[in-house]
Length: 144
Image (cartoon, rainbow, N blue to C red; front, side, top):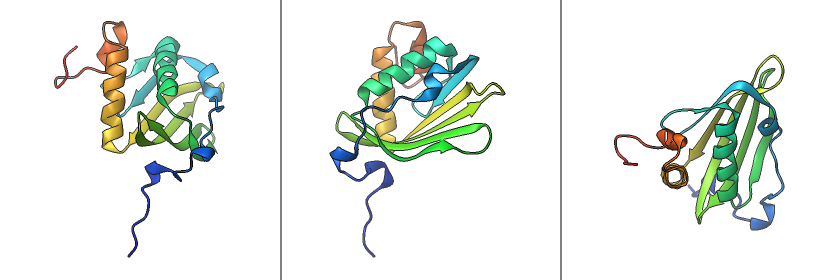
């Protein structure tokens, strides 16, 4: 049995990484939108917090290699891609739940493997330390 490359590692070909992708939903956030992720201890609330978290994550990504981007049913949109953050391969699965107006009402972003989740949590905690958003990235095992 041969070993296969983990899906979160992508193809390993840097030329396949896109640097121009901009998610439509980032400009169509519903009032009261929430965002969650495996690297968070709670939810981002409202468009300002979503923009701050997603914007910083986009700065960290060294391009995105997409496996799938598109609708998944009448009210869901999915992005499945890989990237690299500070040398660490990362797989990302984004699920957007749309409201009746087609706006992003709920955003869930999950990363893999665990090392990538922990790295993102630490980078986010450092970025938002001393702000109201710090609460999202601090738990009983980390201190502000």
